[in-house]
Length: 369
Image 1 (tube, rainbow, N blue to C red):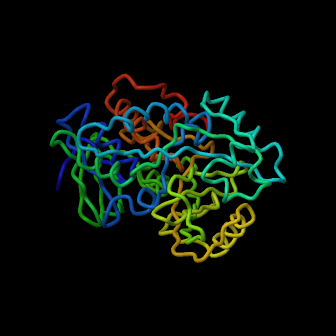
Image 2 (spheres, rainbow, N blue to C red; image 1 turned 45 degrees about the vertical axis):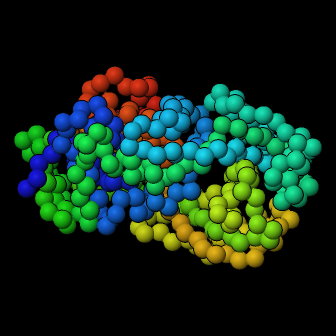
């Protein structure tokens, strides 16, 4: 039976970034990443169309995004380039005259830099010919936004630090958790393991893992997010900004001559291998066609992923109040990729008793929900 200092359940971006940050701070740690699938990141991380947008997630998440910016801009050894510039443009539907003002108020609350565009400036953008005139009257632009190379980020975390890397155990669905004598016995479909500390980074399965460990669930709710890949006539320009609708009814971005389009849906679901709903796909294509002048030639592919939130939509980090040796790293919703560097460092500091890189209070799992 293999023994570890820390066993992390879940090898997606939450677990992988925490493992990497732990090894950076304490290279001698024996860390296990226990993953139920054949490969890490199958359910959420590997299905993300991630981009770094400072305002994303709202004011409570901005500190984590801001604290991650330096990592993305100058990746440490073991990581390739992670960002490609792509500003974000927010537009409002004709029937939502106050939409941009609502978004601007959120930006102001979070201290996010943005600029207003009038109709002339909107028309001059790559999106100008795509948007119908009634959608092109005004807009908000965040310039410091970027596509994220999710695979490179995730693999860099999994590779570890200077030769120190976590032990990755796949096909290892956890079936039992027992605490005795200050150590966890972790029963999985790949065998049994022991560890002093257990990290719950199980994403959509976080509450189920907590219950197995004897802890109270924290109301982590998986929400379905859908993505469609469209062939357009004319094709989207490569320098098209990420275009977001102010009320959250869709966003789109170019990729390899195609358009990635999402209804920005958050449909309550259960933890499973989620698939897109045909109605969601039809609805978002209709919304897109109402806002643009281009022709949708074909829906080439589609997928869905699970984004998991606590009831207040703020991540859950820290040691459980009722179960010794159980640590939470869950509820990162749709901002888990862009906040991973700071979230990993914060969780590592809390696990090791070190000074946190930012105020942990808003994110502690022990807060009232």
